Length: 105
Image 1 (cartoon, rainbow, N blue to C red):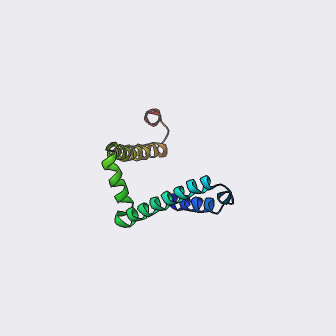
Image 2 (image 1 turned 90 degrees about the horizontal axis):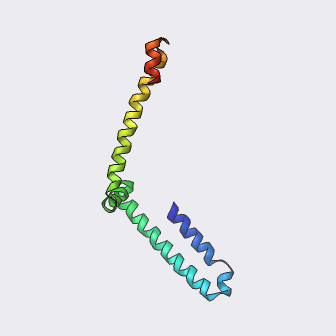
Image 3 (image 1 turned 180 degrees about the vertical axis):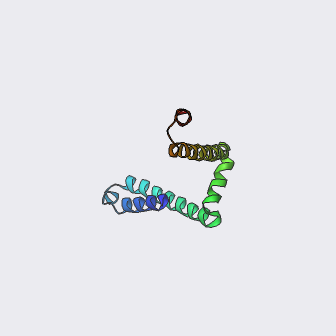
Protein backbone atom coordinates (compact mmCIF):
# COMPACT_ATOMS: atom_id res chain seq x y z
CA UNK A 1 0.00 0.00 0.00
CA UNK A 2 2.89 2.32 0.78
CA UNK A 3 4.49 1.88 -2.63
CA UNK A 4 1.11 2.31 -4.35
CA UNK A 5 0.72 5.61 -2.48
CA UNK A 6 4.20 6.69 -3.54
CA UNK A 7 3.34 5.94 -7.19
CA UNK A 8 0.15 7.99 -6.84
CA UNK A 9 2.09 10.92 -5.37
CA UNK A 10 4.67 10.80 -8.14
CA UNK A 11 2.01 10.71 -10.86
CA UNK A 12 0.20 13.62 -9.18
CA UNK A 13 3.45 15.58 -9.20
CA UNK A 14 3.88 14.85 -12.92
CA UNK A 15 0.49 16.41 -13.62
CA UNK A 16 1.45 19.56 -11.68
CA UNK A 17 1.54 22.66 -13.93
CA UNK A 18 4.94 23.57 -12.50
CA UNK A 19 6.41 20.66 -14.47
CA UNK A 20 5.51 22.47 -17.69
CA UNK A 21 7.14 25.70 -16.49
CA UNK A 22 10.34 24.29 -14.97
CA UNK A 23 12.25 21.68 -17.02
CA UNK A 24 14.57 20.90 -14.09
CA UNK A 25 11.58 20.15 -11.86
CA UNK A 26 10.07 17.95 -14.57
CA UNK A 27 13.33 16.01 -14.82
CA UNK A 28 13.44 15.44 -11.04
CA UNK A 29 9.78 14.41 -10.84
CA UNK A 30 10.19 12.06 -13.80
CA UNK A 31 13.16 10.39 -12.10
CA UNK A 32 11.18 10.15 -8.87
CA UNK A 33 8.19 8.66 -10.72
CA UNK A 34 10.42 6.06 -12.39
CA UNK A 35 11.99 5.12 -9.05
CA UNK A 36 8.60 4.78 -7.36
CA UNK A 37 7.26 2.59 -10.16
CA UNK A 38 10.34 0.35 -9.93
CA UNK A 39 9.96 0.12 -6.15
CA UNK A 40 6.28 -0.78 -6.51
CA UNK A 41 7.11 -3.43 -9.10
CA UNK A 42 9.81 -4.90 -6.84
CA UNK A 43 7.41 -4.96 -3.87
CA UNK A 44 4.72 -6.67 -5.91
CA UNK A 45 7.20 -9.36 -7.00
CA UNK A 46 8.20 -9.97 -3.38
CA UNK A 47 4.58 -10.26 -2.28
CA UNK A 48 3.69 -12.61 -5.13
CA UNK A 49 6.81 -14.78 -4.64
CA UNK A 50 6.68 -15.39 -0.94
CA UNK A 51 4.05 -13.31 0.72
CA UNK A 52 4.89 -11.36 3.84
CA UNK A 53 6.98 -14.25 5.15
CA UNK A 54 9.31 -14.00 2.17
CA UNK A 55 9.90 -10.33 2.81
CA UNK A 56 10.65 -10.95 6.49
CA UNK A 57 12.99 -13.79 5.58
CA UNK A 58 14.88 -11.59 3.14
CA UNK A 59 15.22 -8.89 5.79
CA UNK A 60 16.38 -11.39 8.39
CA UNK A 61 19.37 -12.26 6.22
CA UNK A 62 20.27 -8.57 6.01
CA UNK A 63 19.43 -7.84 9.66
CA UNK A 64 20.26 -10.97 11.69
CA UNK A 65 19.09 -9.30 14.90
CA UNK A 66 15.56 -9.32 13.48
CA UNK A 67 15.09 -13.03 14.26
CA UNK A 68 16.42 -12.52 17.78
CA UNK A 69 14.05 -9.60 18.35
CA UNK A 70 11.05 -11.54 17.01
CA UNK A 71 11.85 -14.53 19.23
CA UNK A 72 12.35 -12.29 22.25
CA UNK A 73 9.02 -10.58 21.58
CA UNK A 74 7.22 -13.93 21.31
CA UNK A 75 8.77 -15.13 24.57
CA UNK A 76 7.83 -11.90 26.34
CA UNK A 77 4.29 -12.16 25.01
CA UNK A 78 3.97 -15.72 26.31
CA UNK A 79 5.32 -14.63 29.71
CA UNK A 80 2.85 -11.74 29.80
CA UNK A 81 -0.11 -14.01 28.99
CA UNK A 82 0.97 -16.51 31.65
CA UNK A 83 1.28 -13.80 34.31
CA UNK A 84 -1.99 -12.16 33.23
CA UNK A 85 -3.83 -15.44 33.77
CA UNK A 86 -2.29 -15.70 37.26
CA UNK A 87 -3.45 -12.17 38.09
CA UNK A 88 -6.97 -12.97 36.89
CA UNK A 89 -6.97 -16.13 39.01
CA UNK A 90 -5.94 -14.20 42.15
CA UNK A 91 -8.48 -11.43 41.43
CA UNK A 92 -11.28 -14.04 41.45
CA UNK A 93 -10.23 -15.43 44.84
CA UNK A 94 -11.29 -14.08 48.23
CA UNK A 95 -9.24 -11.06 49.26
CA UNK A 96 -7.19 -12.45 52.12
CA UNK A 97 -3.71 -11.39 53.20
CA UNK A 98 -1.74 -14.03 51.29
CA UNK A 99 -3.86 -13.63 48.15
CA UNK A 100 -3.42 -9.83 48.22
CA UNK A 101 0.35 -10.25 48.68
CA UNK A 102 0.57 -12.61 45.69
CA UNK A 103 -1.65 -10.32 43.64
CA UNK A 104 0.58 -7.34 44.44
CA UNK A 105 3.65 -9.39 43.60
